[in-house]
Image (cartoon, rainbow, N blue to C red; front, side):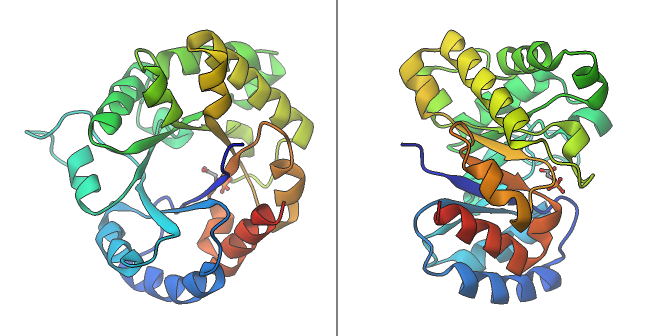
Length: 254
Ligand code: PGA
């Protein structure tokens, strides 16, 4: 049985101030919830503050939204894995479609970052997903396979097991349009099949695959009850403490 994992991708939202009142509400709501992994992923400037607030709280983990693959040096504006790990973060989102589309991240770059994350003892949440044009052209499987093979190249079974994948159809992100549970399940099952080819069936069976794209309390149950959907990466709805807590509670009760 794969333990479910629900993560809040705050994107470029939430100042330290704003996250303070969010956490006042959120931490009370989920204080007793231990049946799944909960991850908050704030922007870099808010990481240290959220880390401090999560000190002594066992059931809510911390993640970052990106990192550089080098350990340090002349990379103005970048952040290393060790810097993130030092703040007690356990996860890092890599290759989000916004980074791929707006900041030129390729599978090769995501691959370097994925290796660097493991070296820094961070669990990467590697995002993949097709655009609407690619879906309309019937290229979903081709796109997913290329992204998977490129982003995960060279990872051994242990690293793969410690990697979370997020299937996020680009056309469903921030649009209010969600993949149907059947569309999402089909993509997740295909991803697991490719993982079996990359590694082996036992490893593929352990890898958690999140769905992302307009997840909200109203569609959580139908999506998260699919056999290969092991969690959610939540953007918009995770900016509202009560909504994100509700998504967690609905998932935990499944
Ligand atoms: P959304 O974002 O929930 O606002 O669609 C999801 C994501 O980009 O991770």
